[in-house]
Length: 257
Image (cartoon, rainbow, N blue to C red):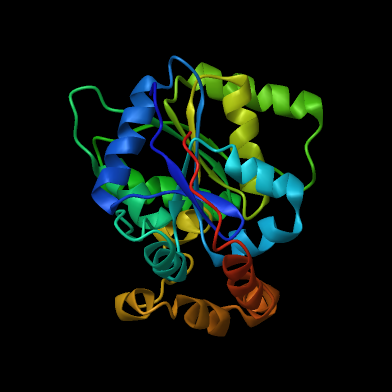
C-alpha cells in the first residue's frame, strides 16, 4: 500500500475516516502490499482515546499506525460532529475480522493468531476452520502472560516468518496488543492487526452485546454487567476521560499521512 488515506484527530488519536466496506478493502489491499513493508492496523474506541490522552508513548504508538479505525460508536459520533462531510461508520474489530476471514479471493491471505488463552485460541481456530473452510490458518500461539524476553520475541518472530502468514491477528488486550502490532511490522513484512476481544467473541467464550445496544453506544454497559471487576475502571474512568479528550482536542486539524 503506497499511500494511506488521511487521518482526522478525535480526542488524542488520529483516525482513518471510513465506511465498514471501505475498511475491508483497505485491510485486504494492505495484506497484499505488506510484502513491501509491514503494515499496522488498529481498532480504537473510547478507552483507547482515554489511555492515549494520559500516556504520550501510547499516543505515539496509536498515531504511528498505518490505519486506525473507529471501533466504538461514540467515536463515530464524535467523528461526524468534528469532521462532517467525511465517511464515518463503526468499523468494529470482531466484525471486520470475521469478514476478512470469510473473504473469497483467487489468492487467499494466510492468517496467524497471536494472543488469548490456549483454550480460547483452540476454540477460535476450530471455529475458523469450521465456518471458513477455505481460510488458510498459517499458525497460532498463546504467549505467556509474563513480559517476553528479547530472545523469546525473536523466536516468536521466526515462527511467524516461517509460517508464511500475510496477516497476523493480535489479541493481547489493550494497550499491550497495540505495542505488539507496531513491533511486528517493524521487524517483518506482514499486516499486523490489533483486534482486542475479537478472539473471545469469535471463539464463543465471551458473549457480545445485542446489535441494538451496539447501535446506540450502550455496548459498554452490557460488557460491564458481564465482567464488572475487570472492566469497571475501563468504563467508569475511561468514558469521562474520552469525553474530556474529545472536547480538549476538538479544534485539532486532520493529518495527511
